[in-house]
Image (tube, rainbow, N blue to C red; front, side, top):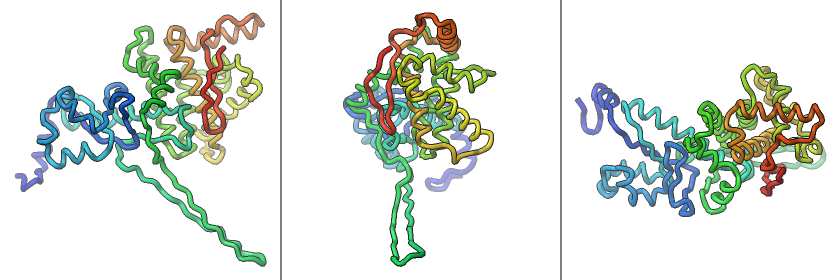
Length: 359
C-alpha cells in the first residue's frame, strides 16, 4: 500500500501501464518564443509555447485544469523555464514518456538547425529539455620557471552553450529568405511532390546538423556534419571520395569561389579527415575551420534543395542532376542543367555573409 505521497512498486507499475490520451508538457531551456511568432512555434509534432501564453490557450490544448487549480508541483514544472514544449500522444504511459522525450529532443535539434548561417558558431544556442545546462569554467596558470624575471599569468575560459535561441523578428525574416520554413513544410508533409524516403532523409540530416550546432565538441560537430552531407548527396555503395566533390560541384561549381577558394581540394581534405577520425580515431586533425567549412556547404545545400523542390524532390533526382552537370562539363557543352534559381551564400571565418549570389 502507498504511504503518504509514496507509491508502492505495484501501484506505480499499474499507473505506468495505463493507456490513454496524454498531453506531455516539459520546460525547455535556451529558447525564447517572442510575440513576433505569436508566442508559439510548431516544428512538427511539438508545439513550443511561451509560458505566459499557456493559460490563454488552455482549452485549445485540451488541458482539463485551470492553471489556478493546479497543484504547486504542476505549476512549478510549467513555470521553471520561459518556454514549454507540448506534445499529444496516445498509448501506455511508460511508452508515452519515452516517445515524447525523444521526439522533443529531435525537434529541438531541428529548431537548432535554424541557426545555421544565422549566427556565428561561437554564439549558437543549444535548446534543451535539460534545465540550466551546465556551464563549465576552466582556469590555468602560466608560470615562468627560468630566467631573470618571475612572471605569472592567469587565464580562464567558459565552456558550454549559454545563449538563447530567440525566435524574434530578425530570426523570422532570415528564415523567410533561406531554407528553414521551407524545410518545415517538407517535414510536415505539406509538399506532395517530395518522396517519403527523401523526406525522412532530410529529417535525419536536419537533426544531425542541429545536434552538430549544439555540440561543444569540435570533432563531434564535424562528424555529424559530414554524415549529414553524405546522407543528402550519396547512395549506399558510392565511392565517396569522388562522389562528394562531384555532387557539391553540381550545386556550387558555377561560383567563382569554387576555384578561387579551392573548394574541391578542401572537400577532399575534410573527407580524408572524416575517414581518419572514423577509422583511426585521429581527433587532433579536426579544426574549427573544418566545422565552419562544412557548415557553409550544408547552408548552401539546404538552401538550394529547399528553393528548388520541384527539381530535387528525391535522392534519385539529386543524383541525376549531378550526373547531368558532370556530363555537360565532360562534353564541354554550354551548361543548361543548373536552374537559374541556384544561390550561393559565402560564409566568412565565423559569420555568414547573407547576401545571395545568384546563378
